[in-house]
Image (cartoon, rainbow, N blue to C red):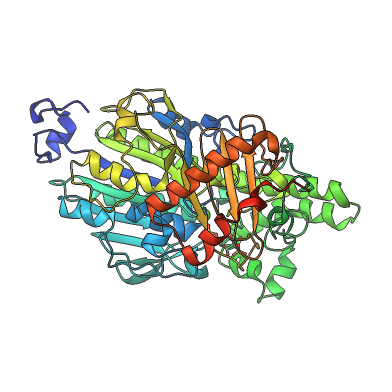
Amino acid sequence: MKNISTGLCAAALALSGCVPQQKDGSERPNIIFIMTDDHTTQAMSCYGSRLVRTPNLDRIAEEGIRFDNCYAANALSGPSRACILTGKFSHENGFTDNACTFDGSQQTFPKLLQKAGYQTAIVGKWHLISEPQGFDHWSILTGQEEQGDYYDPEFDENGKRITEKGYVTDIITDKAIAFIDGRDKSKPFCLMFHHKAPHRNWMPAPRHLGMFNDTVFQEPSTLFDDYSGRGRASAEQDMSLAKTFTEDWDLKLMTREELLKDTANRLSKVYRRMPEDVQRKWDSVYAKRIAEYRKGNLKGKELVSWKYQQYMRDYLATTVSVDESVGRLMKYLEGTGQLDNTIIVYTSDQGFFLGEHGWFDKRFMYEECQRMPLIVRYPKAVKAGSVSSAICMNVDFAPTFLDFAGADIPQDIQGKSLKPVMENGGKTPEGWRKAAYYHYYEYPAEHSVKRHYGIRTQDFKLIHFYNDIDEWEMYDMKNDPDELDNVFGDPAYAEKQEELLRLLREVQSECGDTDPDEKEKVLFKGDRRFQKRS
Ligand code: SGN
Ligand code: CA
């Protein structure tokens, strides 16, 4: 990064008070970490979405860097958030699944930034149960097991419960801007700006209700996947549009009369949080959908296709509010002269299935959800239009921020700083990691995705579903990007398989995720690995 002397600092910043500096005299950047909940790359035009346009997100990528191979260590909300805060894998930070409570006494990057003189804040989704530590200010969603509500959401604001009127994405954006506006201008700041959207059950802002009702979205080629060519894990999940998607919560097939009568119903509860004029708009938007469905002539594949269209209409409309939110933030930063001195990061806690393999939700180590969007704008260090194929992970975010802030990166942080990648136009540095590690634990649980671990390299993926079933999967990502053909045990790949198994063991021992009692035993089952595929 180029050192900028205080004398050359932007007038607006100089006017706003003393400019915070690093030890070497250079200016320390502000950090805004924008993270959505379940926003996947397939729904961002800068990642080539066939579904929707996201002009404000595209601007971050165009004026900064897009990472094409960023992966979650555990594709679920709480676990991913804990990895991000600590820079450590789930087995180290202790938050392995959504039923955990985050041990807030442990080291996190906001605490370290605070020590280094940053003012820190978090607004929006937190989902880690324990009270946030290391933040000078917080306003986090509560209710619905901390997922928060789309309409009139409740927050815990520095320990006080408050209900805010309006739509969740807009309110969180107001809170983010209010924090920046009222901050201590003698310090740099780090803001974690976390949206609820586009999390299930995908309720759009009043202004976006029905905006895609006349759009027909292209179906993914794997919408009618029959899971042949793979093992039991794919076949035995419970996250399909065909079977799991609900008529009320997901498809919203309830009339006003039904919603007002069935007060115990979850959709009714959230519907009744809306102001009456919004309820009326909601009714008119969903009336056609209800009528179509109740004609009762949709069956089999036709019904799945129809559900997919409704799913996309709602999911994508919630992402529009997020894109607008980012536009509003950028405009505010631009207007106050803070845009170029701020590292703006946009990501999501994990990816998501938008009908691929017939699914919604995440959790699997398959590409659509293991992969996270990651785009960063910081013109002082990042050349506009950079694209990186370096294998990155959510555990890298903490060291990256510490690095940019000029703070020490503690030895026990497991991620790697992405600063050298960013400063070098996205090029993969010498000696960079060969594989992203993954370990998912939440089973038995909602959506029935079996426990598994594995590695993703540039060209291959190796997965082990280790409990309940003991099955390996291996994908040739260049020739089979949709992960339909499990080549584990295929003699044509025997050498590659050996190499990947060795690498997996290396990566596991490096990050300390070795469990000699269970996993190693399974890992060393020898000949089983080369049994012919059935
Ligand atoms: C809720 C959702 C699930 C989702 C989890 C975890 N069900 O339980 O579909 O997988 O959250 O999501 S719902 O009926 O309440 O909508 S996460 O992103 O927070 O990990
Ligand atoms: Ca999530």
